Length: 415
Image (tube, rainbow, N blue to C red):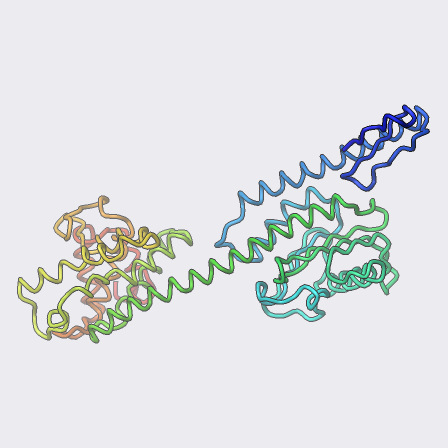
C-alpha cells in the first residue's frame, strides 16, 4: 500500500509498503536516484511475492485435484512431495508423520521428532538418500538452533547456518503439520551450504502444503471412522440374518469372500472389490422378511413356500435402496438369482443383461449353497458340485465366472 504525501511537507513523495517487511521506506529528503532504487526494490519484492502466491495457488490446485480420502497416509505424503519437489530446490525434502497421526496432542508436546521409529510412524523422503535417524538428527538440531534464536519451539524453524556434530554444515527448514491442537508430523527441507539460503517463499509454500496435508489427514481419519461404523452396520445386518437361520449361519460372509476371490481374478479394482464384498455380505438380506418357519423348514419347500423365498431379492433391494451408500450393491442384491438363459428371478434377465456383480455373486452363492449343509440335506461332495457347475456353464451361470471358480486351487483337482 502506498501512503499519500502530507501537503504540508517537502514535495518529495514518501513511499511505505505495508505488506512486505523487506520493502524500504523513503525519507522525505530522498534524492531521485535513491527514490528510483527504492522503487526498484519494492518492485522486486512485489514480483517475489507474486511468484510465491502463484506457486502456492498452482500447488494447492493440483493437490486438491489429486488427493483422495481412500489413499493410505504414506501415499498422500508421497503425492505431496512429488508436487512440492519441483517448486522447492533442495537436497532433501521429507514428510514425517507421527505415530497415531490424528490423535489430540498439543504441538508443544511433539515439537521435536522422536529418536526411535514406531511401527505406525511414516517417513517419506525424496532427493538425497538419508536414513530416518539422520533426518531426525537434522530436525532436532534445526529446532534447537531456531529455539535458541527465537524462543519458539513449535513453529516454523528456518536455519541457514546449521552446524551438525559431525562437522557437516547445512541449511534447513522444518514446518509443523498440525491443525489446531492436533499435531500430525513435520515437513523438512534441507540444502547444502553451497546452495542458496532458504527464505520466506520456501517456508510459506511448505506451510501452505502442511496445512492442506493436516486437513486432509483429519478428514481421512473421520472418513475411516465413518467407514468403520458403516462396515459394522453391514456385519450387524448379516448377523441378524444369520440369527434367523442357524443352518445358513456364516453363509453371507463365505459368499462375500468367494465373490471377492472371483472378482480379484476377473480383474476388479480395489473400489469394485469393496463393493462386491459388501454385496456378497448383504445379498440375502431380504430373507429377514421371509417367515422363519419357511427358512428353517427341515423338509422340501412347497411351491407356495418357494414363491415366498423367491421374494427375498426384491425385499432386499427395497430394504437397501433408500441408503445412498448401498446403491452400488443393489444390482447384486436384486439379481443374484437371475439365470444366464433368462429362466431366473425376479426379472428374468439373461446373458450380459445380468449385472456383472450379480453374475459373480450368483456363482459364489450357488457354490456355498451346494457345498454347505442345509435343513433338508447334507452338503454335496465337491465332485458333484463341480459336475453341476460344468453342466450349468453358459446355461445358468456366466461361463467365464464358472471357469474362474473351477480354476481356484481347491477345486482344480476336482475339475
